[in-house]
Length: 417
Length: 93
Image (cartoon, rainbow over all chains, first blue to last red; front, side):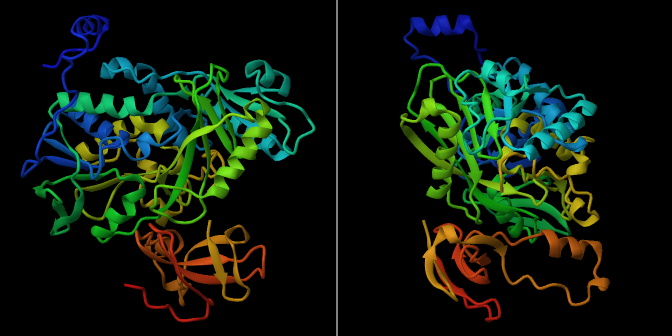
């Protein structure tokens, strides 16, 4: 039994100069056989394993990770958590996730620093205003609470913003979801890893999957760089590399991989009290607890597996930031990076069974998967354990690309691509 | 930043171009004969390879014409560009 984290354990460990903290999870060698294998130890994969162990009693599970835990898009996103999409199916999954966020620190005994500081979607054109009105009406019917802010209210809520009318894209209003906010992305991966490990899940890093064993149309095992593993169930949660895995199994996915960039500034005193998203000028902004501005942009145009983006996107993003926030005109940027996002044609995810029995995919989260982490893991665990899609996950099956029942979120997904 | 060679205009800056996704996807010759799955495959599913990729580009701010390219999705190296009517080139080693 692992000691729980608390104010008392903090005090006790302070007395020994923090030299006696236990490892948060084991680093086991792969066993020859598991009841289920999850490919990808990012937030979604670890959450899937955690809920499979906790709610479905499956403890002989391995999570395979080709790199290090949480080193992909989980550690590369801009940590925004919200649930104001357009379609009923999307609100089903994103609101399910948003419902799990407030209790997540307690559930995992790990501070994921969920901070519901509000997310503001900016309107800069007549079209934006109409889109916000449409989405507000849809969300109201779905029971999602949103508020419309006029420019003066935007300024009251976020005092450093420039609402002057004499700019290229003036602020005409904003849509505010107060229950939305940010969370600490690494802590989400670490918290799920620690809790899953405590339930007996083996998290195996530096273990790349190189192929699948399929017998009689059903999964029999996976081939990895650390040996073959027998298993009747495989859940692929590999984000930008989902098509690569699908190709190994002889499947085709409706996914294209693109780089999505983000960058952070030098640390500043607290100036930015909320999260700002602007589709039209294309910048997303929040301030981390360390004081850095965390800034996101649009996805790069072309298919890529390189975890870096192009300079023209950064230039565009900085121009937009300067116009909205003249106060930031002289701050310096410290780091920039890219993640590989897996984009579906309808900008909605895939939580699906496949034509191969026992092979499941959780991917296609595109530019906004972080917010869904707890909900995604929760319903995907059900899908794998029961071999039947969770009711919330059912609309996100691969068959929608044959039936035509797409879940179009290309506007509400916010990031242009 | 890329310098991309338009087969019609020569080398130009990446800013002038627009990306068009996977190339060489032929429209089904007998659409009525296709099943829903085959239609879904044609319309939505893509190779999305990690490596060399046959793809389409539009010289939007130039001649306005579509052309094809072979580009590497990890290194971003452009191996060649060619007219849409040209045959599929062999991939480099």
